Image 1: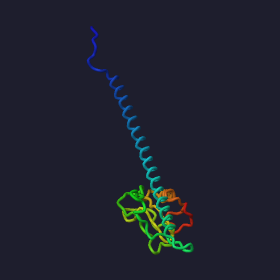
Image 2: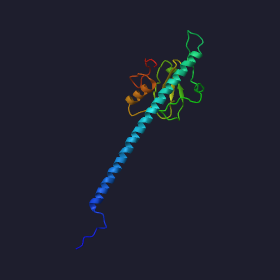
Image 3: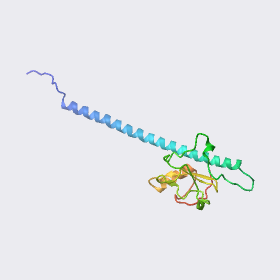
Image 4: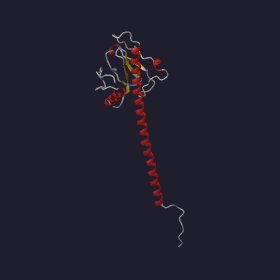
Length: 177
């Protein structure tokens, strides 16, 4: 009897090869998931920072135009609207929302005493990215509707620099920051 080498690979070797391939594929999938999560988190932080900056820029522009257009020291009149011309080529954008919605919504007559919009979240495409109350000179960014009111409230407070306790608060006593 002669012992000759087998032309076929042993079953044990094949099992080892398949097992190693599964480990490599599993590691690759896990790496892709982690990188995707990090990318999404970074994108969300960038959108939050950009929107927070947009609110501050718009508020500063309202304040500046209030001072520039001031007729007397006794009476303060805020601009009746926020003009895109104030911002040259870089019009502030709410990066938390899709861009297919109106830019700024003026407070309705029954909202003139409010520091926050009655509807602070943007469901669908009905509400503007930003809300402006020309009676008080207050600018707010709307936030997307999230899974919970607590998450939406946290995001609203974060982006607007406010301290609302409830999402549906019709008026807040917080100071602008």
